[in-house]
Image (cartoon, rainbow, N blue to C red; front, side, top):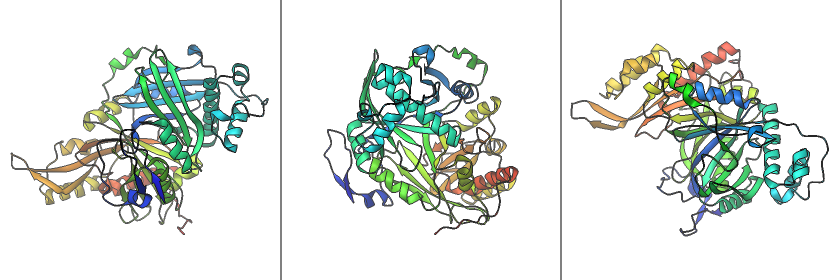
Length: 469
């Protein structure tokens, strides 16, 4: 199947076979040749946005920068936007329930697309009194988000409903996505306020409750998006806590069911032009009890990375199956936040009350033996890494000599929080990269063992009756 990659207006339009995007060794480039600039933000849906925003502020060290709600004239959606470095999260909740009265949806359908699904969405949003009275597109879009948020929380609990992507051309990216199987939720349209103009659209991932809002900054210098007001919250209370240094969102991990990894990887390749970046299977990531497969899809410039996981045949129920059991479908399992100093970052998070997975002493004995075998000395103090339960994955093929006679190499440092809420369906990863672009192939076994210990406490580490086809 051939399809046009959405190159920027100044670049030649090319034809690329989808198989090319799955070729091993596909090289990232500096420019967003597929039209995707990077992560814009991650949107969480929850039943209490204000409370969750406080968690991000006081536990995770984010700063509240913008908001939307009754105080700002929004009668359908409450939203709190927080930032740490370049990592931006938005927490949303609906603040009004739809009535049963509705019109036929024909007049509103054009806001959402040009298919039968668009008429259905229009009928849904017309159940909100504000939409029927004001007949404004922005109110209709707020009503849609309120409905989608309510539906998401009712089905999944708290979680990631939308991974927003900054793009070079909304119309091109949207059109290509819709032509290749994405659902139309919002057609390309302009948002503006006194800070300038952005152009946005929204697509849905078929078979899921997850969306991607596409954001093109036409001429905008506001803190987030039009119609969001600068937060009046006093962030001075943060000064009593140790700062948490986050650079940006490194990657967002999605979980799918049996035999769905390749299906959704191909969707992201055809709809958004993402390419295969990295992959592992049960021979790489397993214990004697559980296993998974993972295929990382990335944008042309490597700024957006989305690992897609599926369960693999194993003796016991693994983390992907457990996720499905409590999330009731596919979705985002965790988000990795990149830092330049993982020891400082993790120590600060611990003082703020964040709980992390704990590693066994055996893991570090094996790690130190492997490092010694290659005569590699890490920049960080190994005793501190061990005391903080930080995982290490290194590439001995990149070994180089230092002036002091020791050897270094490319490596990553990782640690994973425990689930954020009572359902074991979302956690954070903190990652520091030393010129290593992998995803912890050498740390998976240790990570799996810690997750299995948590599953054991939850009573979900039981014999598996599922098998791949």
